[in-house]
Length: 304
Image (cartoon, rainbow, N blue to C red):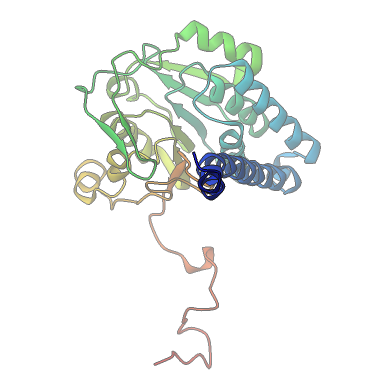
């Protein structure tokens, strides 16, 4: 090849080869920075002070979350466990109720949540078939924001009950857990009330609906349901399905924060999102924004 042509093509070649590598390195750096921010906010914040948790205690929790994800096969990360812990530790002690987890796989998140429940002195209801996913008819599952699709087979993500119990015994607090085996369509009928927090990692629309039918009526006002299925629009759509909510739960659809792309835990995507039970709007519980109009503020004149 002509020497001049080689010199001409060299910058193009370098850009083609190196730009994806640079982009990947930047993505990793940004992701690490975001995770570091979330963890730092958790450790240095006031989360759990009402339960006697100090900075050292929160740091110990994060270390345990990291260990659990290293020792137990997991579909969730340390930062997700941190976000869930932050939410549970923010529930005032006078609000009574248990914590529930549906879909536990090998028990990594269960172990982490059990340590948090020990601090807040709440039972952790651990719900799973312990036989893997049920059959959903080989329907395609599409995550548009992630640009991925795939299928689930019956039995996927199976963690046997004794395996999960063993992992929680080794890396969490088994004494805080009540195990509820079986498919959600039949196993959740006898849940105790009230519930203050739920974490669903159930993958399927039908399983999500089964969980909501039984958890939502028991969820306290202001209680939160987090899911690890924010990218699956079929699952997210359930939280906006007004007809389904009216027919099954006699209330309005609550919506979902993180629809499609998840909460901002990662520069490209996050699988975590949530909904919160709010039966009535109370302005005293919300903040005002400088760019909005409030008729109750004297001398406030709306712009034309």
